[in-house]
Length: 126
Image (cartoon, rainbow, N blue to C red; front, side):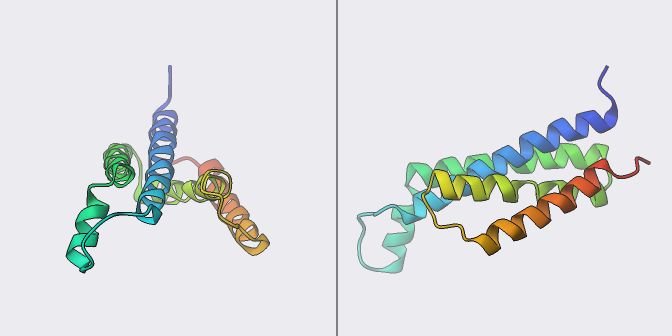
């Protein structure tokens, strides 16, 4: 039998994966070359029709729904820091999928954030 805290972890894990994948898809979509009219409305419309952007928006919607389900079961002070677990996954996706240059200071900052998430996740249970 899965405990209530275990259920929240599962929800937040899925939410974090959806968040990281959604952000990665958005980044790829908005950096893709688009054919559009020169004005900003035409460019915005072209970006909004990009499949990567649409996928990113859908994944961010999934993240929101999973996060809301977790908030029904857990305190905000527990659930919200869990969303920061998306930072290491997003940094990995940026480096290895989007081929971005992620420097040492970004990796160290991401590591500090991950340690903070671990402290909250493994901290006292109410």
